[in-house]
Length: 539
Image 1 (cartoon, rainbow, N blue to C red):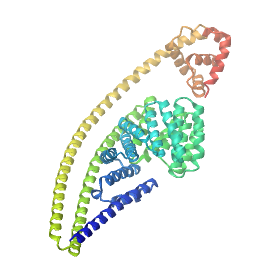
Image 2: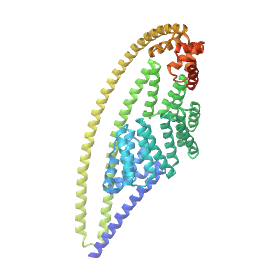
Image 3: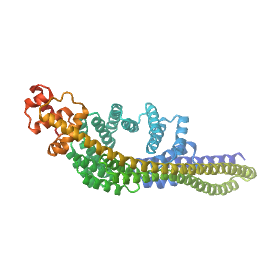
Image 4: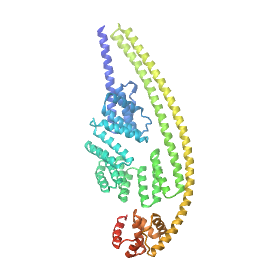
């Protein structure tokens, strides 16, 4: 009797070990396929794995890979349930490498859902864990995301510090794409800190890396360089943007071109590029929202009430669509999880029925004496498993029903908020029409005052007692009655201070240095120094 029993145990162990090693190896293969960016193949492979049959360790790895795959494919993941399972397991078992990757992915998910604070906390947790591991690339990506978090809060010095750490690790790991993204972000930080030489240096370092890229990555790199040059050299910025456009038409490239032409004063071309960008957005509602926000800001600055009204209405519709999409994705995801669990349960039942038949044959062949005892134990185990699964499924159904009720209530509340926003929009439109009349009256008063000040200047009277209102009134008068001078200052000079601007206007009117010195109550030598300073503000 001992020999047949030993054979049964040996056969069971072999079956279990083969199954475990097979799933573990399959998960490792899927990870390799995802790293090599063959996402469709990875999705097909991961669907063939029944998650219910996996051990806790395999299930944690399975959910980690599934989250990574869906994230890289651009699929919206509405909840953190899968990645939280992985985090819980790896925290308990102290597998720091995979735990750090899990927190990194959770940070990305929250960042994509505009939950910047939670995303930042997850990246910081990943940073802390990575200190005890040797994964240079993951550490570099984590530092880069922390840099972006600081950049979005305008803490450029901290952002630059993290970006330098990321670049060092990316160079160590020889990751060309990551090096390019780090240099891109460093250029943006230096630009915002007015460190133009450093920004140009970083941009020049990006250019050799582009030759190693192809396709979409090359287009993204060229667009990044164009964005860097936007505040340094507009012509170069346009050149790189058009190079990126030849590789792939993307809405953010047209958005950048619109910004370039807006700075040049070509508003008609800028609007055309904005419209092209909106047309290419498709289902990318976040990008469409960004473009319409730029258009709305432009119309607000130019007091284009019709444009403000149209873009504001479109923005309300898009934000409403984004909210509905998030809710629908959440419901769809829960439905998909439930359907997958149900399909896996049915598959598991079929497998177990097959196992019952196999075990029956093995028992009959190997041992007849222990047949009755074995069959009783086996049936008891199956009944207990079915009962426990039935209870867990009923709880899962009740939880999903409760979640559906909560989502419906949230949707009703958002509908009320949208109607309130529409009311506020109408009030804003009324206030805009009132403020336009007030501005017109203010301009008339300023022009009248400016006319008096202009006569005083023509009589060489001293302006040392002028305040900001006097300067603004005088410049307003110049715009109306000396438009050629105002046009020269607007086209040829950039953000020139009021006192230097006054000296420039006096020069253009034809006043001599002595007369200007008398009017401004300064010495002729100061006049000459100011002329040199004025050249600095020339575009």
